[in-house]
Length: 456
Image (cartoon, rainbow, N blue to C red; front, side, top):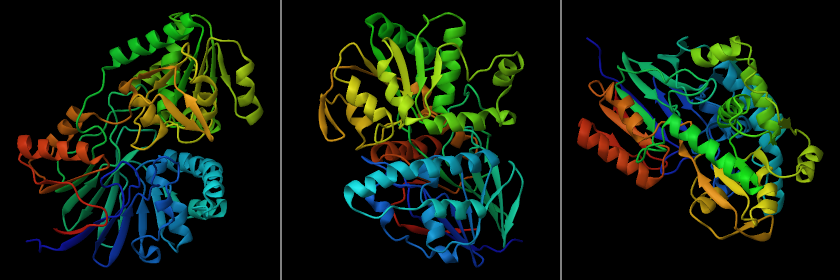
């Protein structure tokens, strides 16, 4: 007979909001972190990231990283800087993309720090040190830390994304990270889980659903055609990881099937260009459909009209190309990166279109534009918004409300408690109530800094 033990779970980020993911598990004299992400809002790096960590970094034995989005990895260099000397574990693509993303973010974080007269959250040497501590593992390959056994399961969210399943004293707690909007254009579906005792689950879209894939494709084609007809510029603030690659695949299909006229299409994101190279080298993570296209001889990330602009000079030169044209640039929430310069130049013209294809966090310029702002401040200049603003949620890399519910339902019979995190308060509480009402679960939305003891 197994003796009941206690496991302490602490929520140090990603509660009551969609950024700053950071959870600590303690039992049997060991401490394990899951994710250590950046807080974000109107800026890439919120001032809260400068606050001391709420635990002793030197006492943490290991860090498990679900995926390479900055709101899940952005404080790892700070963790290392503050004394963490344990191993960092993730899949190989997550490590590769994290290295690129953390170094890429330094430029924007440095500009913000200089403008706001505060220290930089981390430096390049902190990233280098973190990468030396970083180990890669495959899905389902167990890692033993004291009495913990940890495996990664395929989350289907972005390339290499994983759920973290921790087994202790014969029971399992699952950290979902972000769950993918399956079926996805490139990646395999989210792996089913049927035997979790406890779960920490994201809820970004817990209160609403996405358009279907067919509707998304139809609306994208329509927006492109309308912008071409008006002789305007289509700006797409895109997350460099996954959203950009999915979008390139769909535009590739439109171009090669002659569904849209020839047009200049700029991928104006150094990070997205580098990340796309990682995608090219990681095809064993793709689904059968994407592999079939590739094996048929189609380079899905290269097509007529596509122009890569990695340098600042090339980016500035986009303005000299005649309209109509499409510009895909980061950041996805318009709170930094090259997209803000294009918005500054093109938002004032009603012939132009801004297409939002990702989640826009509260307080970000992208959210303000999504909600109909008629004026927005960019680089110290007030810009009148006359361009058309279009939102297509079907490109989201997150599961929507119904699919989150379906994922939980598969293991509802084994769950003792489910903690709902990584969502805005209204959305999280809607999903909590749905899980309580329709599955009879002990669902709970933890508060920032809260700790709970679980029976194991």
